[in-house]
Length: 403
Image (cartoon, helix red, strand yellow):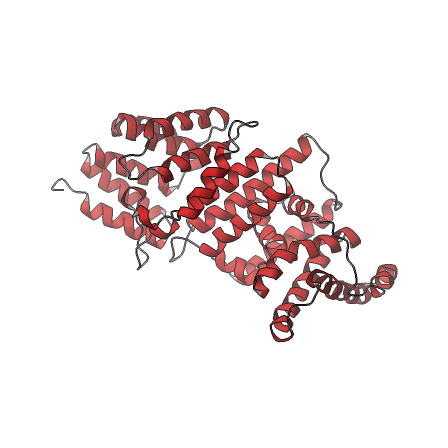
């Protein structure tokens, strides 16, 4: 395992130790980042310590003590305690799940939850997170700082939420946060590249971690399966020069057989063994896509049946949008357009280019070429993704009565 991989794995564990010990998330997180930086410079030269976790806890603890000393005299007791620590034994207790719950604090906005999770649990630097979300580093630093201040002001102690509804709700937010990280990597919301492999890989890694921490949670297993089955297609989603390749035209020989096998096995062993949630259903849909030898052999009636279930248990505009595609594939483009019409006037999809992109494809299939062309151009204007804009603009130029 590389030094970087070791640091990514240990970062949340070390932060959890310090937050549990001192109860100051913002100061502890800054100290851990400094310790990670020190390790990244020192370990490649001198080798990884025998107990890297203890090394990081000790170094970060000293940084924290220095901060306490300069901050105020009332930190004296904590400083004295920390000064007595060495590189010796550190408790094996893993509080990563509690740390994930803290980063998914309900008073934080979704962007802040994403940024804080990537920073505190993922171990990414502020610069890396800023680059992933296409914002200046200073802007991301402010966002992370405000998130930490919000947690501090909330008075939330470093303790897992109470069993029952509160814990289930926080776990739901954690899953949603990880899913948003994955989606941003799989289809970047803007910029020159269609996808960010570093973000999808980090989302999968963190979801694996979560699945190990809550092994009996079926939705977390479903989320991991969904990520694996979706990410399996990544190598075929773009041409060598970065142009978008739609699903029905992808070279399926490029799909990751290993990820598909793992994802299928995971969802197969999960479905029917507990409460069924939206991630499990989406994983089942993804499995049907991935197991089809060709696009023509895809079991669209079964996919539509699953979308019908998904719309009942977790309705929303994105589900309706995807269901419209499944309806079109089973009942024809006009039937799909009728479903898509349900989204007209839905404020949640205002400015969303995917609605117009799907509309354009269905209009083209129905033979309404001029309307399709206008919809492709509208979608191209709305998207901030350069590869998607190029693809949609090219489709518009080819969608004419002559074609």
